[in-house]
Figure 1 (cartoon, rainbow, N blue to C red):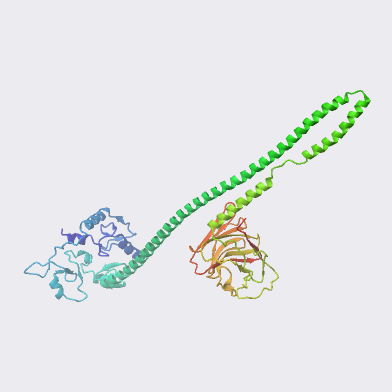
Figure 2 (figure 1 turned 90 degrees about the vertical axis):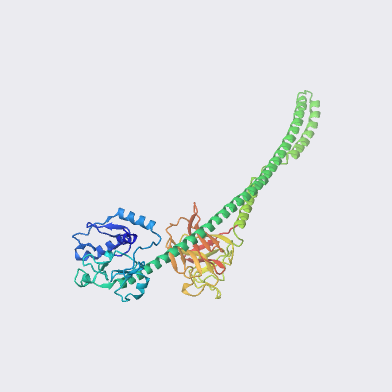
Length: 522
């Protein structure tokens, strides 16, 4: 059999293309799995199923059996005939010489060379296809007529007799060409949509790869930074250890020296007293009253002088260790190291203070500008442009670069919001509350539940409250704002990823509650 004839045998009689995932009915005819499934689905309403090729009927929807052998034949054929081969089909109308055919007319059942194609009937009835010597698949198996129409209800190609007198009578039909153009257009839309999805997914993959590479570099840099930081901390701790231990040794030496001097003085006096005792014992043994009394008067005088001398030499107390001073020196040294670490890790200015000129009238700001609390009796603050009408306040600090961190201690009761906002945030309108607009981002506690807010969008967090201390980390250039609950252990809550277009302030909102910005130095 010629290659072209074999190719025709491998075509599905429904879609007229090479079988895709071929399946076989009980009658022995093969179809594409998708094609026959669509036909059988269309026949469900009639209660009777039939083979599109031989019209054999089935009372129940027939089982579809995969034709593995046919699938392998198709795969082998396609792999060995991937390049266009000569058809081997000759022009039907050439008499004196055998010119190769370039088209076959389905209506005329004739093959045409280039010359005869030019003069062939151009009407729509004369459908030209690629050269073939086998037109059986393009004819109705029942009426042996050319498949000119497409039944929209049954999704199958039919002939004119099927349309007028057969089982497809009264069904909505289209010409094969119209159906082809419609289905091809639909397929084109599907392909365009899939191509768009593929391109979008490909771009997303590339974006994720770029972000992954960036984060891996950030992780490597952070790893090195932490190692360098701990190396520096260890050096400073070693220096502090030497300083504190040196002071301990100094005080130890002073204590030992003072105690030794006192002991030596007392030992000298003990020797003197011992000699006095021996002398007095001799006097005590005298029996002559005159001699005894004369010697005794001298001893009484000597006794008073010895007592004064002893008191003078032992008046100085022993030097004790000053433990309090040691611990103060240790704590100050540790605080200095911690403060230096904070300066190394975070930019200066993270020690946030509140701007009372932005505080709403129902807020009280402490004298150290660290605590904000709501009040029942409104204050009479000067009405200036940047003052909020809401119970919220901004920081005096402005962050336009670098990494910053601050901690907030909240009251156990009431509702609050903590985050950042642009200075250009509206201060008077209803949407000026933190998180209710495009110019602020915040963590919110409302009725003992956590959520994050931006541009009036609320995302609930599943974490249950366990403490009242929170950390806020801002990386301005990276556009990251992260929140942490400072319990034991520290719990990560959420990170906003954005692009900051203006400098930001730390921002706070309280309702029947209070917030305290913790000092970041010892």
